[in-house]
Length: 422
Ligand SMILES: Nc1ncnc2c1ncn2[C@@H]1O[C@H](COP(=O)(O)OP(=O)(O)OP(=O)(O)O)[C@@H](O)[C@H]1O
Ligand SMILES: [Mg+2]
Image (tube, rainbow, N blue to C red; front, top):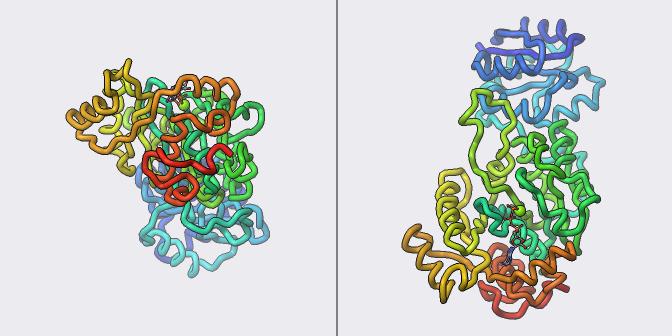
């Protein structure tokens, strides 16, 4: 017997109860009055399948993700002429759709088959055919997440400069600011008043209304070849960036550009471990989700002793997450903070005490950074010859070999950089 929950708006109630109640092989275990009751019944393990109507208040991507997390598969229930409702359910990832009047002999196997399906993921892998993709992308688009511990080691500077280098080298890039503690990409690129950014994208995703053209519209070009999805305008709006929406927007982001660079917050704690309310928003959900879907993680630390210790701990914390092994980058490398021959000293410390053998270094360039900050423009534009730009260009070649020709082929960017800063 396949156990079933229902949560539908009242005008569907009778039809759904009839369809499920009379179907062979199904047991209707609870008729939930609203999404909250549905989520708690799902979390309690009462059923394997939930039937929801498209017009159920509060039904969003996060609710579906929550159900999927408890092994509950979801089917939709819509009137046959409610095309909008059916489209919305499909965009939310609901693939099985029932209509009033469907024969019980068909409903039974459909829901039983859903319960038996192996994958429990609510998000479809392919876009529905009616979505128009503005700029087709040939190769699979990598997602690079730039993370780093607390203390402003330069995550945003590295993320913005890296994205600008990629774009300058002809790789169409989307930069996404998912820092829920202090977004800054908009300000760094002088875009403050311009775009609704991630908040609007997340809202559309929650409602099942985000698609590739919509995401592209929310991410204007800040530089040729560089689209930017700006961050939260105030960090107290962090509950708006929920895991399911972030996952969805990063999935769609891969169709908007050829490389996606993500700036995230420093904190890695998962509030879910502290709370019994597993449906509650989590402050670091955006960071943790981005690290999970990333193809490449760049871990940025600063070069002074306090920052290096945080970097070592941070890399250990990232190692227990389901994310790729980070590429360790030490920024702001300078003798006064790290001792004479700072690069050697840092390699020595990180190698001996943390087993980090492969470390990239970015030089201290306060004047260049300040000039870019003051201008509200990328370092590649304001100080294209900065040694910091050269070193980040080297990083760009390493994470995306398509840049090699334009940026020079050395790993650390010491050679020519033809197209950066143009
Ligand atoms: N290589 C560098 N040399 C000198 N200054 C730098 C360098 N990289 C970054 N900075 C400066 O350090 C400060 C912090 O940089 P940034 O905002 O990129 O850090 P962050 O890690 O994103 O911080 P936050 O925690 O605020 O998000 C800025 O003033 C920036 O200009
Ligand atoms: Mg930052």
